[in-house]
Image (cartoon, rainbow, N blue to C red):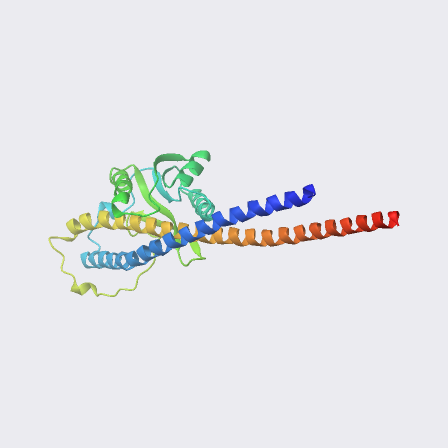
Length: 288
């Protein structure tokens, strides 16, 4: 067998094995995505209702209420929480959120970064940003308890006067093929970056006990932690969706490559057979 035919056969086998791997990864990512999306969608109504409750408390309290977590901190730095993945092979998932975060951070001044995900931590350190903490292993099956240390780090830094603002950068899940980078300012709470909500319950139905300030002191930290957890859920669902799509595209490309290589192999094989027939015919003619 000519060397070219052996080379093509070897390439076909290699691409076939690669397609088996990408197809398996696609199926695994699809399974994880379904679970992550279900968790993300379950959390969204709670976030909306909690925000409405907070708005109602602030509305009933009037302008006289000034809570430390509702105004910009006295610090001269900002804190960024960047949500990425621990692994690659997820298309442009990590690149898009990293690029979006860097563009926004240009106007922040001095900034510290807390990276949730190995890819974000590596990228930020490589680019020279001050990464003060890194958390990994949270994306596969996010738990509320896992975000408490991250949120506590941010809340303590803000209340102690180290940071004037705390912002989350994560990827918002829209559908299996669409995920968009998003920035959310969580401290001071309500400053901006959150989506407007339609008030479903009038504020007159709320009775505030013992008083608004104490209630907010309990509510705001919990709502900030909830925002962290929801961002982690959104990021996890987006990661698995992006990986599933990337592996599907890789599988489709491998299939197309196999078809092209098979066609080439058949052409080379046919040319070899034709040449052999011609040589036999020439030999027979010479002996005649």
